[in-house]
Length: 193
Image 1 (cartoon, rainbow, N blue to C red):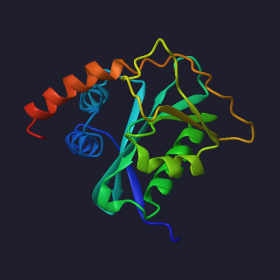
Image 2: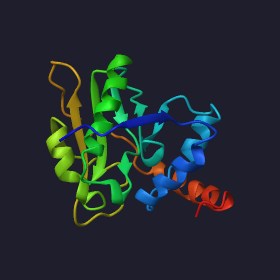
Image 3: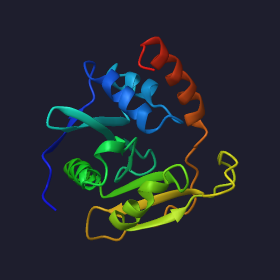
Image 4: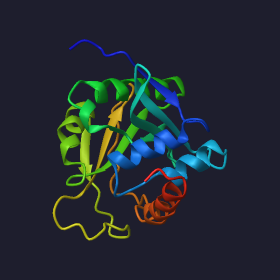
């Protein structure tokens, strides 16, 4: 498949509303708009987000956040492509571009957190792209009482060295609940939804 001319543009004050609207359209059950606003206002320095553009058209979001316990690991954050642009290789190319950025910043491992059911359509892609996946079942973390389909972490080594399993270390899924509620309010105040 031919590479599509894509670019990923860092999040900034002039495009944060676009990113918030796209992210919410892709993930209406978990908005990151408050996080995006804090990032562009320099109140957060642990997230680095981008808008994926096809030509000049914003079509998705992608980013990463730091792993506080491992300076060589980054976590993919809010990665998604608008529905009408999927199945064209854009997701793979976008993730390739992000991995290049990570390598340039001396990261060795990239991890991605997802849900089997809520992100069902992306599971085959993650299984193919990443080195391995594992279920996340830490009993001390909020699992949203999911009865069908579980939380999953996918991992990819960016070097020749094999990555290790995450092994259910606590990641605090519940922290997203408060962020989502704040984000919904801000999206409404900014008339984005």
